[in-house]
Length: 320
Image (cartoon, rainbow, N blue to C red; front, side, top):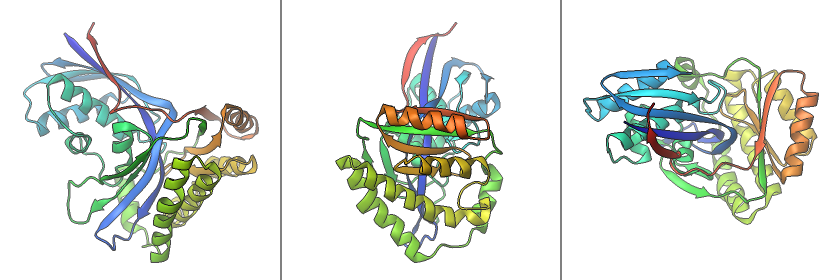
């Protein structure tokens, strides 16, 4: 019996573009795939939906959503062989859902774009960064959801590969989980609208700072623009998360990354995961060591180039 195996990296969310929606769209965002953390699922056809491994209940729910959405009278056996840390700001739910949707589309010969995969499993309700990093990696910019369109997914505006020497250092501290689910929906509903000048500044930083510098390999300009986007977003979300960054280990590690001279630093989504972007393996290894040695909290640190995937990464095999 055929088994489809799909693997996809976690995603880093570098920041939102617009919480105001003054031009008819909300959210939008920038981000990239994360090094060191990934989801891997093995999916085979079955008469019913059964799942095992970590996140098994969530995996089964995604499969049922996909099958109902496409009116498929079949099931699936899902083995979650590896998962992304949940509620850590790394897109664990989106990457799991898209991986399962991609596997089922392959098994049942459903032609579906990344947007259609996301709709089928109920993802990209706000951010579509995870959808577009799943679809191809690189530095991505997405254009936000149209206000009043329930199943809208932010369109991909730009995708640029990172310079080959750039490295990402990802730190996932042992800290309270980030905001998610119903709590996240309430948090967004209660956030005060940002100043329009802040929204304009973020767009300027993305268009004239982040995109040109990633194309030209200018890590100092990229890092400065990224850090400013993070600071502006941090002010937007400080009402909900208790500070510019998640208090405790996340804020502590970001301070340490800055002290160590990392060109660009930030928190992914609600955290607690934080990251730095540096140039070269030596810089990445040095920063990783200093985080492990100097952080007062238990922390998992991953370092490496930004992963390059194309619509997840799948293969066919035989189920046991």
